[in-house]
Image (cartoon, rainbow, N blue to C red; front, side, top):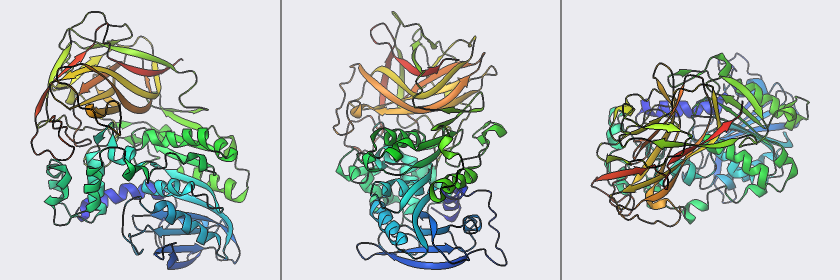
Amino acid sequence: MNALISRRIFSLFLACLTLSIASISLAAEAELPYTFQKKVMIPMRDGTKLAANIFLPKEAGRFPVVLMRTPYGRPGETWGGPKRYCPAGYVMVTQDCRGRGESEGKWEPWTFDAQDGFDTQEWIGSQPWCNGKIGTTGGSYVGWTQWSAAHQQSKYLKTMVPVVPFADPYHDIAYVGGAFQLSLSLGWGVSMGGVKVEPAKLPEAFKYLPLNKWDAQFDKQVPYLNEWVNHPTYDDYWRKVSIEGHYAQVTVPALNIGGWYDIFSKNTIELVNKTRKESANALARKNQFVIMGPWGHGVGGTKSGEVDFTQKAQFNVGEAEFQWFEHWLKDKNTQVKDWAPYRLFIMGENVWRDEHEWPLKRTQFTPFYFHSGGQANTRMGNGTLSVAAPMSEPADTFTYDSNNPVPTHGGNNLIGAAIGPFDQSTIEERKDVLVYTSAPLTKAVEVTGPVKVILYAASSAKDTDFTAKLVDVGPDGKAFNLCDGIIRARYRNSETNLELIEPGKTYRYEIDLWVTANLFKEGHRIRVEISSSNFPRFDRNPNSGKPFGTDTELLKAEQTIHHDQMRASHILLPVIPR
């Protein structure tokens, strides 16, 4: 991408990296309060050397170390982090990932981060300025570099503070519900591959077909992009870089920080849940914590999308991280062990609340059923939503034209689409969007937890997609998205073995809408949107049933959504009693 888009993407990622030490001035000082060592080449097991900057306290001694491994350019001499940490008795190390910045080797996203992270930790632990304790920091991909190396069990790694992290490149980056996360995967991937795209041409670039030759439209090819498209199932290509199956080997406390509108919202919580459940280490099981605010990929602020969550949403990430490291790396009593393991911001009510498990034990998973007179198309249609189960009702139908997909308008995005909550009213005027809305609530309803839709649907195609979105509608009619999801028909039963569908036959689909925490206030309405596209967040299903990535033609599909006694389509909401 050109410099403008690259700066935008990098600034979003770098915001996550530096927010962990936010509120520290980045201005250069006449005399820096640390000793700076530039471009120290750290050897890996295969002889490759990775470039690092080292920030040392002025006084001699052995100190705990805060490590950041990044593909976005390691912070340099006047970085704000060491201005706080070095005078407080820490060493800080920033390192370029393999093949990035001034590091040697070939850049292959996520391929070498586990071993390189371990090798770097072992090297740091053996240095005369290290007291044998390392904590890791950073966000997004830099959250990944922390988690990917954790199960390698360096004896020097003592704790982590990953911000908006991911754990499994297949599920968290490339494919969701079997659909390809187009704008994230290709938008981020092409930028990291050094390809230049004019900003105005990016929307058109996302439309390029076939996807398995997507980078052919540019002056430079990025081989790993084609690899991602050529591996649409969860096969060994993805398994070998996943943290799945390794949580038992995680031995250190971790503080995860994320947002309800982040691209990794669901996973930020799952990392904590899985380690708490699967780790063989009692210390690690007990000391996994997560903080979830109303944010996108940049955390700590008060506004997301078109919604201002008030000053109550503001969170000092840097202070939380510092207190965390003071406890785990210096044995100081900063009360972090007294924190609740799940600190959640409840949107709508705009309050923070401490919880001790996820999903919450008091959750009442409640089905809200779809109803209509057969014309739920658009928000002006007759689609309704209620806890009453349907009896005999006509199905709803719409035409999914993959040449005219429903546009992404807010949500869990990073590149190529708006981020966060936006009024969906215009989207809900499309006839290919079914809208089911409850009556105005006579009392508030809190929905906090994982959300899913059970859909009974048929299609005229051999393969197609179905999407779902949960929306909060205010008395003024503004409809703000909370969470959404997608399912690709061929992967309805398995992410490893595809099964095409029989045209005209009704199938049961389960659509994962990830997670949210929202109070639907009295007078508000709960709404669900059903469609077959969300572009460019997800690629357009061509409806052909051909091998993924090979289509050059986009077809139409006639979709039927059932909501009757035997096929009761519904959304399953995690209702919290109040």
